[in-house]
Image 1 (cartoon, helix red, strand yellow):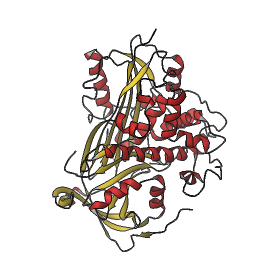
Image 2 (cartoon, rainbow, N blue to C red):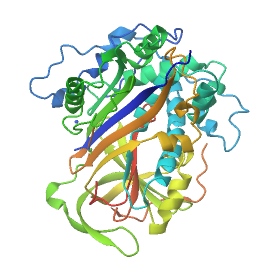
Image 3 (cartoon, helix red, strand yellow):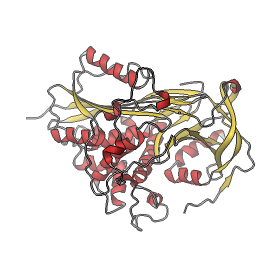
Image 4 (cartoon, rainbow, N blue to C red):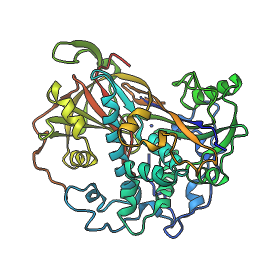
Length: 478
């Protein structure tokens, strides 16, 4: 008897607002890959700093992860040896030297993100803005991969570079990757770092649809996604879930589950919310209308923020662009990458890699600069299926894909929705041995003006995690 195909729906929601931080070591046990479980909903609590706790929200339910994991537990910060063969010149694994386990995984997550960005770019208009949250996409893909088998599993692990990670050290295996995603949640989504970063993974299952207990257990253990019974044809469920997302994203994402197919059997929901405050704020009174050149023929007036302070920056002669680092309070920063020529964006996008980003970061110099940056707000909603297919992930969306680790019944993924909002203003942001050839410091530049299309990358420093990235082709459009 043939089983009917049941659609699986993957939904990622991101909000980021740039608009308040101590480092401490998140210590995990080197000897145990399987750590004591935390409640699945621990990360759903508001991770706003003590300075920013909204009225009516308390700290009572927040878990002290340091106490839970102990003082001598440094699992994700271990620096393992890398095979000399794998670290040959030009290989991305060269970046692994001296990096911790979590940083190594995030280097490969960034490599996947840049490839996905290029794939998505090819499906959009040249003059469109782009915004994605790589950490959310990789997390969702990692979660799904727990239930993949055979060629489908092999394909996903190869394209996401999980295979490269496992091959980098004889100490690594597939469970190491999922454990590191679990630890990444512990490291990123905490209080008292000076910013707000919240995440939630939800797993919704249509009533009476058979999900394997092993899959439920693993997504709960590694990704804190508790399986919940849902009726996608029930307006009350849709309304309740929309309200849940609205609250999580501080009102930035409304009606997230509009037009949901009532026949879907399972939905994976990933939400990320970020709010950060600039170290060097832009005085509101300095914001003024300024020309922003869209292309060789068009110019628009946009609100241009302006400030002066000490900023890291560099000039990349090889890619013919300038790079500026804007710091948030608490160890997160935004890289602004501006091609010198309007025609240079295509080359920059085509050659963006983790090696290039590290080259920028190592070559920056710190000096007093005047910075002019346009205010912008991006709101994007993508179905990533076609972009992922063009990267080579085809089995996952094929009727013959092997997802037998999720259910005994046949499942297909019809929709992989990624929805996000980012706002950059005067206060900050709010969102639902390397060669230096061809490089020179910006030693003679005192003004950094962002008045043409640019890329932005938001990184968390301690984990090297690429949180958000995008292209602002026109700040006057969302």
